Image (tube, rainbow, N blue to C red; front, side):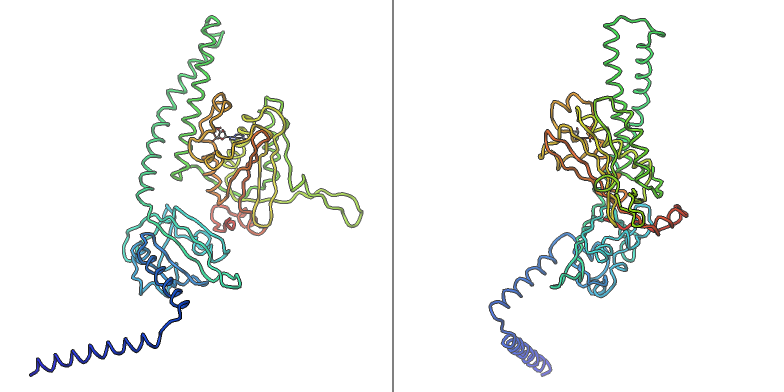
Length: 432
Ligand code: ADP
């Protein structure tokens, strides 16, 4: 009897459920347009559920509105728990040294703050409830409402721990190998110099001409090892970096004076500040002309900036036969822009996208005769990125090239505070 009651009860509840479903479907009968939109919505949510990359959508306050299963797996949070929570609680990010990300580091916070796309491939994410951490590649884009006001952000997250580990091992190998090889190369170079020195050795002209070539090749090998070592350091974050406030006008004025001496060709060198040289403003009281040099402060290691400018300048000299090299400085409230412009051979447009990659050299008669490693621009880009800057080039074959660098500009207050105690201050220039 009891069994029969259960069976009949079950049948009734099934029919009731079927009926209610039918009624509900009738009530929500959709127009073709609505059907298409809802179809699109459900197919995009199916895609988001299925993709292997983590996807997270935030509202304008940084609260998680949507998080897909892949992002849950990365963070160690359950979907139902993460929704409605601030992203900083769910995605606990820090740098390689374990220092927790501040909002100025966090690409999710940065996009919500400035409405720009931000990328990061060094963020370390600690999984919820465990000590497990992974390296994330993050790309965050802003979302706008119909009035073009920012009303959220979408972040794409990927675990790149394995790639980072392989990269680290490669860099370690290159670093050890180049370090070990630099010493014998330096000693060969030294002995060749002694052999060429008439006060030390007597050799005939033919032997001398061979030794001169061997010496040049050894010097090239030495600089290749040096560049390899620097590029390995730059990749695994071991490059020395002692940032301080650098006022770029005076810094570049004195650097340009030094660089002028290394130019042995018939090339003029000039330094310009502002859009058309120094900004000139008439003085209201006397009507006389006063030269106003803007203050362009950045927060970087002056040695690294010197390396960058010297690198670009050396290239400009190397690939220019005659004409002019201009070192320029300009900017706006947010950025300081420096550029190195030459009147040289120029760079074919097909090569430009690859120029900042490791070992890339334009294949021309010029590069075959000029010694080089193809590492200079790679190292330069890495240094600039370390300061949240950007580097790019504009060039026309036969007319010359201009390499541009944008670095976040410090306002007066930031500069004053950072100058006070650069070691302990946490203020950083706003990122580009
Ligand atoms: P390299 O040691 O070969 O100079 P870089 O990384 O500094 O290596 O430069 C990569 C390539 O970019 C060079 O081989 C050259 O073909 C091209 N290049 C760089 N700067 C200039 C320039 N100012 N004018 C023309 N070509 C340039």
